[in-house]
Amino acid sequence: MEGGAQTAPRATSPGTVAAAWLVHVYTATGTAIAMLTVIAILEGDTIRALWLALAAMVVDGTDGMMARHLEVKRHIPWFDGALLDNIVDYLTYAFTPMVLLWSAGYLGEGTWATVLAVVPLLASAYQFCRVDAKTQDNLFLGFPSYWNVVAFYVVVLDPGLTAVAVLLLVCAVLVFVPVGYVYPSRTNLLRGVTLTLTTLWLVSYAVLLDQVDDPSPWWLAISLGYVVYYVALSLYLTFRRKKEPVAA
Figure 1 (cartoon, one colour):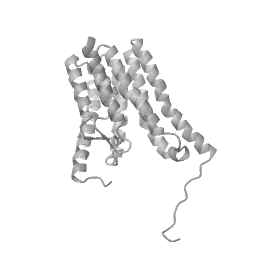
Figure 2: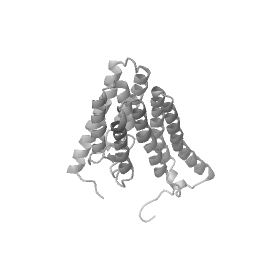
Figure 3: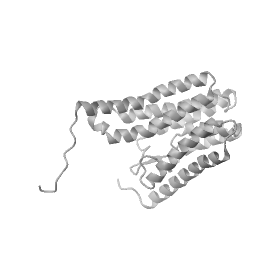
Figure 4: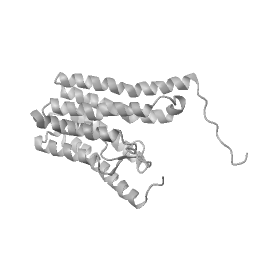
């Protein structure tokens, strides 16, 4: 055949459509997790809220790979799975962590506490609406609203009000700074290493949460070591893309 042989796209069948819908349902369970997290916060159970945050991260870290593998967008083209994912991510990565920190007293009291809780939410609302929030070379542009991770370390390390305030405000500013951050499941460079270390970080999250009253220095080192790796790789990729701009 002129131009070379082409592989015909797989046909859409009731089974593939059903599988695609199951992926969307799986993503949507994040809204239920967010609701259960708020309930845990209202009941004063910070640790249960953080366990639910871990469940939300597992769902968010796997649904995209499932969607791409099953070609969900092709089988249900009229349903916006990316929008659903953004809604769930805003609830679980931004809104519930701020409610947790505010409710548990980590932000202080009164107007100052409210301001500290609202600033990250406003910054993330801006970021989630950017059309270039995810770059063509599969990076997040600006701090990727990992407020759930910030909340986890605040609870585990309890660094004090001043440190928490500085951390939240700096991260909120970084939302607007055009640094590219690694998208663990999609950034090509060292993706296998990154996914392995991300899995290890999730394990360390569970271990440290179980040991929250007396966290192991070794597991803390593993957990924070991943953060150092993530930031270092993100900065490297940012500097590299400035030297070698990605073609439009």
